[in-house]
Amino acid sequence: MKVVTTREELRVARAGLSGGVGLVPTMGFLHDGHLSLVRRAKQENDAAAVSIFVNPTQFGPTEDLAAYPRDLDHDLALLADAGVDLVWTPRVEDVYPAGFDTYVTPGGVADVLEGARRPGHFRGVATIISILFHLVAPQRAYFGQKDAQQVAVIRQLVRDLGLPVGIVAGPIIREPDGLAMSSRNTYLSAEDRPAALVLSRALHAAELAWDGGERDAEALRATMRQILAAEPRATVDYVSVAHPDTLAELATVDPAVGALASLAVRVGTPRLIDNLVLAPRG
Ligand code: PAF
Image (cartoon, rainbow, N blue to C red; front, side, top):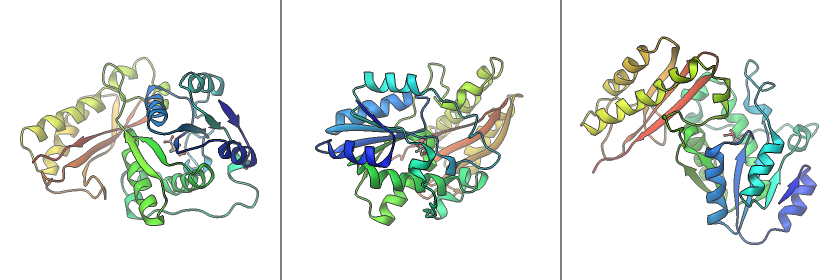
């Protein structure tokens, strides 16, 4: 496994890989969710590459950039075990050299939900992903469905700019009790950890209602809000039932299209997000 830092080292190492490359962009502090993407990238391509970079341009001024959890040695051991061929661990100046001044600003799909609460977040994501796709030139890139809006923004980016990269979304990987895996779960206190299960419980209730024939989006949102309201440690930020591609809020869910049910909830310190696809019904 080659581990490189500068753009030039990356260029040389990339040139040494033959065939199609599967890229897994990450911010490190890897968990089983990331590793499931890495294993898939390895299986589906001739070579697997991973980037580890806590990208400052996607953090707002009041967000947790400095405190974001990091453990590079552990990450590299996991990636070596998984048989990864190339890891790029750039410094900020390798990604954003002095004088850097070009950003990629996504459209409406980035303005709602997470984008509405985190102004500039998806501009930072679209910019780093554009840089990564140009420098690594992957055949496919792998993202977790846990960040469903990020997947939607990146699919739109690839379509609009005609980038020759296949976007693969891997399913949400959950702890045995249902909590969606996230590097931010490390911020949960012992008392808040059980309370965090309210997110997956609320989504599950919406899915049961959907399976039972409920097509009124507000009724589905109300089902989730009711479960969340019963958990005193949880403060709801949003509850959404939206079109799976545009993420526009729905009044009625078209059974042929389905919807994305998603929510953001603060449990103690961390703000957690989770989602579930209400799959189309013939
Ligand atoms: O999902 C993440 O960890 C980040 O948003 C990504 C895709 C690595 C871009 O910095």
